[in-house]
Amino acid sequence: MFMGASAFQFYFPVIDRFLRDARHIEGQFDGQAWILAKAISSQMENPLPEDLIGKIEKLCYHVRDNLSQYGECKIEQEEIDNVWLEVEKRVVELKSREH
Picture 1 (cartoon, rainbow, N blue to C red):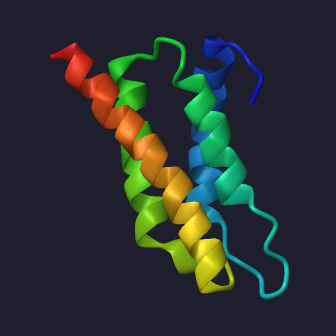
Picture 2 (cartoon, rainbow, N blue to C red):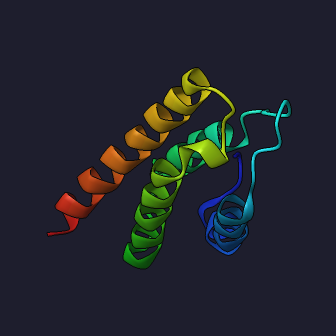
Picture 3 (tube, one colour):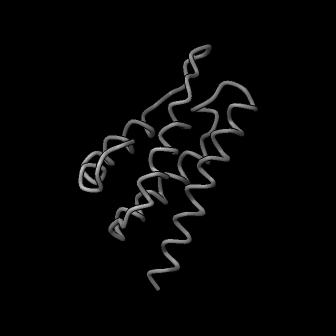
């Protein structure tokens, strides 16, 4: 969460793979998808390469389309969805600045 832009670019594939491979285990929800969205959002305050922004956008779609994978109950899923929606909005904002 508190790493420089170069480190974030290096580690983003790990975050992406982790979230795509993550499976919720009943009774063990701990907010990983939520906190990782917050970390990504904070990194988006710095300039990021266009290809990385595209990868973040794809991850947003994946997480938001698979909420049951990240949270046990509807409230948890809504919290996760809301924070990833904010990341998605930030992606749209950054992409519109590029054009």
